[in-house]
Image (cartoon, rainbow, N blue to C red; front, side, top):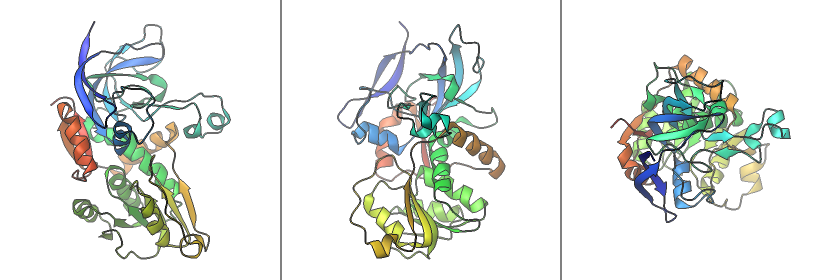
Length: 332
């Protein structure tokens, strides 16, 4: 039996590292040698139990970049051996429900997710279905490609859901992995971006990337056309709504959010303001994001960790010590 080193949840808010059995691909799947894996706040929610366990223990990680090592014998399709691919959060959908048939597969009630329903990329090897992979060009470094697979895709979908008008004014609440990529897209498409973040390092990065302003929570922002809430805190939603001008839209990007405090109708919703959420992504979102990334020269600000440091990376993320996005480098 072939083994590998990898991390798994323990059910107590912590990870353990050890020898795991190398997974074997079945029909429609490939075995990937992991080169890099992004560290996402959703991983924290899985480890901490904010998201109910669907598989326990589970190997976290859903922003995986690596090379195809093994294809299932009878699978004529899919990438060839040696191809670099990316494994995203969305792992599978049913393909025949009303949502899948109308281009909204992110709402499929039978959808499954990497690093939650199935083992992910905090390990030397991972198995993934070919139908949900992205081809990663060899010219794109694994550490740059990995953050695009969730932080980038979710941020892009959130930007679309926020209904930002051309040249409009966008507020970003929370400025981590996803927000720093979303800001680049918005700015390069002509938007004026204002950032609200409790982290001084994050605010500095926002200004470095071209944000018009970066303030602490409660700080002044001009009237906004749109807002995206990346922070998993309900009270931030209320602040974002209060910052919207007439007909503005606030999109909540996270998979987990603490309870919303009471809203004042006149202050937070009246004048045709809209509050909406973001649920996962479609494969089309990812394809569009990768096209944009090349055209706009999107670059992730990467804080690199060895694969053996996954627990430290998650702790740093939880304590706002990561500048940009944390990525596990399997070559270190």
